[in-house]
Length: 67
Image 1 (cartoon, helix red, strand yellow):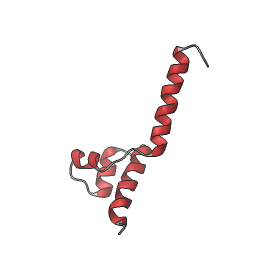
Image 2: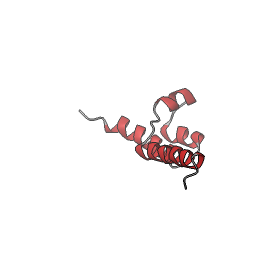
Image 3: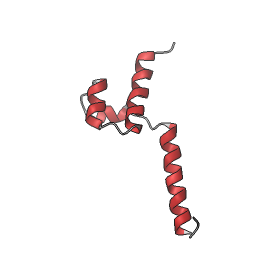
Image 4: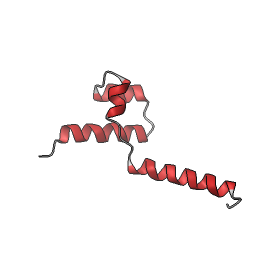
C-alpha cells in the first residue's frame, strides 16, 4: 500500500529545502511543530547530492591547480 500523504509531505518539504525555502516557512507549510520533527522528515534529494559532489570536485581541482 502506498501512502501518498506521507510520501508527498516528505518529498515536498525536501524539495522546498533544496529550493532554498526558509526553514520556518517549510515547517509552517507541513505543520511541523519543532525543528527536531522537521529535520527528521526532511530528506536530501538527489540534486543536492550532485551539487555537493560538484562543489567538492571543484575544490579538489582548485587545490591541485586544475581549472
